[in-house]
Length: 507
Image (cartoon, rainbow, N blue to C red):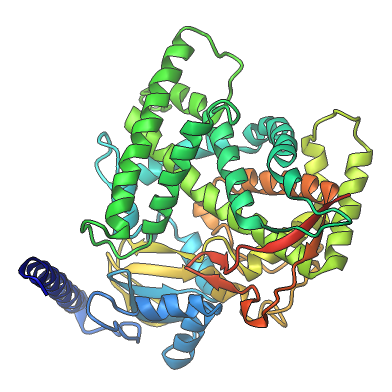
């Protein structure tokens, strides 16, 4: 080994050693802080049982490993059985975390106490990639401002105005990007679906949020999409900002994305001032014109860029995941596909040739939405979420100190046989009528912290399904080697190992 290589290896080794040492000291100080707090509160109180795992790494490897073999719930179920049926302590992504979840009561406690005992919290990697804008003093001010603003742009009324655009764009997208992959009677063509769906959801987000012309701005969109892929790869990585790491690359990509969005904001402001785009009612224009009721102040460009970027990240990957998984289950269960097709065909028959879908049409897609809900139960687009304790409190007899990080798991709740008998079975009828009990089905969180984009996502997915089944018959592609069969894994988001290779035929 040459001297320069040896030097580089030595530097890297000592850097890793330093990081591990600092994190070990941090963990020690955190435990000491808890003990001091307990003593000050009057006597030692019992903390939730559990293990912090390895220094810095904690139990992150076990957490990811369970997902990579397709059973992320195993990480939680094993520890619930070992330590406590309701709460346990672990360490994830460099943070000591107390898990409260897997039960309806745990979810209800966390969601109902949003803004009282707990608040949303994001890992350092997320906070670094989507930093707090300069006019806000802390993370909670950012979250409060975002929660005031988002409902204005993602309300039911706002979403209703997007349906026509979604409908016409989805139809054109299938014609342009999907029809060329259809199989014929003479030839079976296997198409990998995930990249097609990913492209669709990204273009739809850019069209609806930024009014980008998906046909004329292809180069700009391609560059943006590459940058978002880099950010998504690094957003839940271990936050080591060292050249070449996924996290370091993601930081650089996020800076470039925000520069591009800020440029679009400046361009849009000029057009709004000159009244050139009165007809544009996309989210970007609404954000620029939005002012706080109390102060009358408009939002800063940096804050708008952060919010737009966050929306695209949240919506792009999650909707891609759900739509891909919907196609997988429609292929696996032809009887479910046939029932969805019947429902969508009835809606199509009630429309004129060029008539666009409306809100009332979306409301008729009840069985289709049941299918989507069952898909999100088995493969939730978000694995769970982090919270932070705003003050000391007790849960299930255990002491939770102020400042402690908490985690709730959607997959652990969705696979709980107490709420969903035969939890591995795909059964859309679970959601018929009143559906599952409150706080047992939580793909969009719950309480005051419920995802603001829930209605937007619902409409987009249903419009996609409407055109998909109306246009194509889906057929399973049988691999020549059984070992190459498709598997569902979680990294930590649900992913199909082969990207869903299937055959699509035009009706």
